Length: 273
Image 1 (cartoon, rainbow, N blue to C red):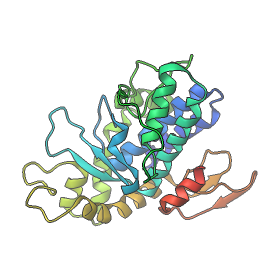
Image 2: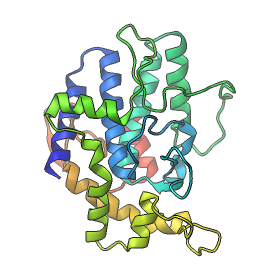
Image 3: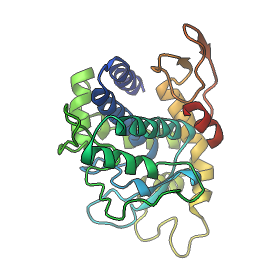
Image 4: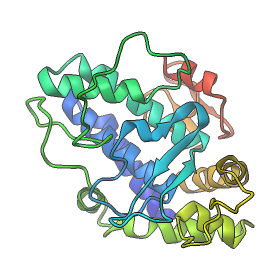
């Protein structure tokens, strides 16, 4: 999609040009949220990705429950390599901003980052039992570094993107675009329904189903990855950080072209260490 490419490039440019830490955090939160909305088929919501523990990153899955009345839409959605790389980029940004802010904002960033980890070993320190992520995984900061009470909803993201690109309500189109692409690339209707959470009663993961979450993930992850490559044009990596985060950075002033594939988790960690 030309529009999606334009939006991602505008959000990347905004992030790269932000000179203040708070502005960089806010621009990165908007960018990564948009990428994950594309990659997961998440519905428009006032609380997209509300809990960091919904991400099971060693399993490359995220739990999504994106309707006011819960039902068959509650599902595990696979995370392809591009989405994982952007998410890890965000987690690294959270650790950085946590060292620059104080009080509630610092604790919120630290705790959120601790959940967004690829580490399969038990944490060395206990997580706060009273941590309530009221602002969600993707949150905004005020200019003074305090936690903003303005939530980063899909509506708020739409308004910001329209200011940057003049494209109206882009998040309203993402699910239908992804469904169309999945169908055109050979995914069955049942797999597409499972991805989008469109299976009332005879749910693909219901009690009588022989399909597991990982069965669906195995089928759909490479297709979503291919769609993201096409839409985001993830081919060029430039050391300035404005390119796709899926690749190792070349030396300064060099430009290198890579195939955009889904790297192993260990490579993702090494690329952002």
